[in-house]
Length: 130
Image (cartoon, rainbow, N blue to C red; front, side, top):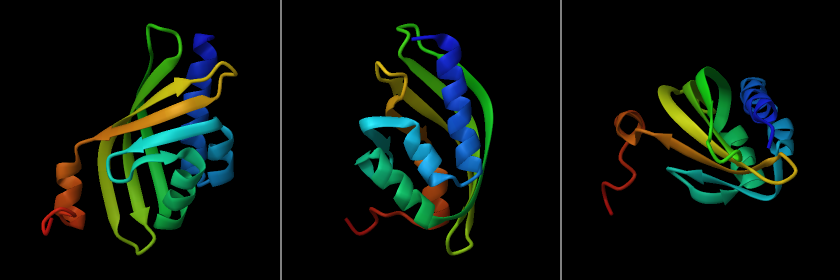
């Protein structure tokens, strides 16, 4: 896989996230692609991004760095997410999205990593009564 293609694809993902272009985001993912989310678990990519679109009012993602993996089929991006939820609440956190690519150069998977503790303090502990 061409390193520049992977970098361009990751940057395009964040551009489309900032534009709230859900269909455009989904188009970056190949058939059968999935997202691993700290809150939702493993979800097929189209379902994840449609759910994210419905839960969001606005998003501003600032990318700090994009790193390409040594095996030539992955990349990771460190970012800050200023997220306005559909109900108007605002949440800001830093995270890392880790992407794998399929043979066609589309995203095969995306895993989201961030410290959930600050978010739990803002939105509540979903496991308090478990």
